[in-house]
Length: 413
Image 1 (cartoon, rainbow, N blue to C red):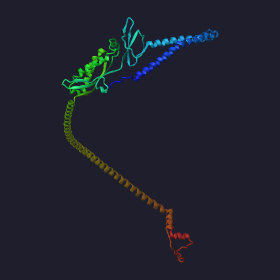
Image 2 (cartoon, rainbow, N blue to C red; image 1 turned 45 degrees about the vertical axis):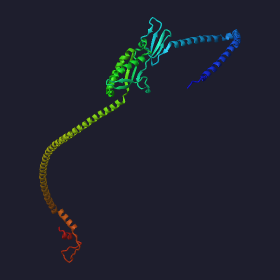
Image 3 (cartoon, rainbow, N blue to C red; image 1 turned 90 degrees about the vertical axis):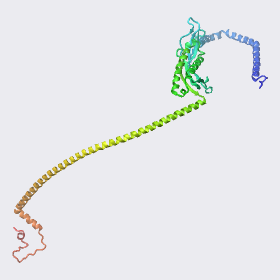
């Protein structure tokens, strides 16, 4: 496809803008040539008339004094601020400052790293160099993943081609930024670091054999060894590495199949070993179970024997206690029976004596006149007559009216 031969839009716009600017410049020049002198004459005559007025000058004298002082102060302030801004430079937290003296007996780099702060720098006498204090990375890997360098192409000692993605972090040594600037490495240390890191990685990682790439402890040991080698390689450039990380590896497809088969074989070996260990463990468990059962039988027999012994001893104690209890019961019963018989005999004797005494006392009481009267009274109380036939013709029968005779007849004297 052929490019267009006519003027482009940008060219046409540039031509129109140029013509318009030329017209504006001509109008301004024409006004300056004819109008500016006339306006200057009128303004000058008016200003002179006002300035020559004595009253106005007397009124404006304080104002002009204040304005003069303010103008001087403003000029001094402006000059101070401008001077400070021109001689003060800020070192950011992400930077390390290095001061260079340009005009003096001690011209050269000041052997000191300046921390983030504001620094007094006189242009022409000093120069401030800024060194990045942030962490830098040297990344090797696929460009599609954001890596600035291609992955490392390696060949193992046993002939396997390997491509590895590696990331290395580093930064400027503390207190060494001024030496880096003094040796002229401020603009090239990143390139030198990349070359040194790549050289060390090719040397160290190239010593890994094909089977060692899949062994994590071996890879960690190689990363540690690579870190020490990189530390030695970066020391002349006043840089210090912070870490080495193998992020990815690529192998040929046939080796992938070989590794898969090797892993499968190792897994089978591990499985067989685990099955053998399981069978061995099952046998040990069965043996332990039999031993436990045997020990349980022996212990059960011992416990049964101990229980029988304890039972016999307790039975003897129970028999002894029962015999003692029976003997105690017999003795207590015998004592109680004897005491009862004695008490019963004594009681009966006391009762007989009381009965005898009662009969004797009763007889004595009844034999008295009061006793006979009491007996007669009781007999009279108990005497019940349904019918009484008195023969009035019998002289032995007392008259009913003769109570004394009647009582003597019934009761006696």
